[in-house]
Length: 183
Ligand code: ATP
Ligand code: MG
Image 1 (cartoon, rainbow, N blue to C red):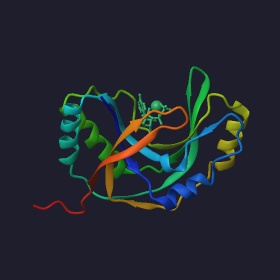
Image 2 (cartoon, rainbow, N blue to C red):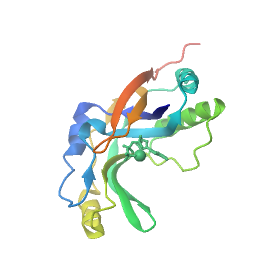
Image 3 (tube, rainbow, N blue to C red):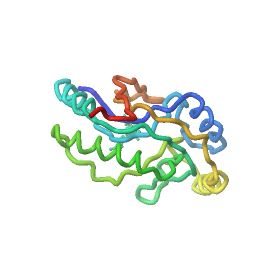
Image 4 (cartoon, rainbow, N blue to C red):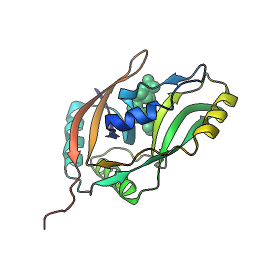
């Protein structure tokens, strides 16, 4: 079985900008900067033959390159606990469009629909063991954060190996976004 997800990899310059926000919250488990990514679709554990179908489906997607700007920070909560701290993405029709195409392609090869609404973000830290006041202060302090925009020219199928400290993500396939679809 392979554990897979589809995401935007982020250039080193942008990862470094985001890493500048990290730190200063006791109990937070910060994501290592090399692991920063923006998930388009979590796939989970699948059989290798199915992974081949996923690859074929993703390779058939035609979508345009676009400019991505990360901005603002926020939290995800579950059962009254703040689970994670993230950097958001500015509203972006091209990104939404790409995510929809990925979702549709994956459903077509038989994956169950994702029920959660797409909420583009880059996870900075797991925070279930951090004090809520510290997290709220962090959100307030960095709410106006805006990263330098980057050009997104491909999306990526990653495999994930869960680890005790941090997971190890491996880019398996890059899929190019193309400015002009040939007639
Ligand atoms: P760990 O689960 O050990 O914290 P991780 O979350 O870094 O590790 P994965 O669980 O393989 O690694 O997740 C890969 C990516 O997919 C991450 O961006 C994660 O937030 C996202 N993801 C994982 N599970 C889900 C899910 N059930 N629904 C939506 N996205 C998910
Ligand atoms: Mg996980």
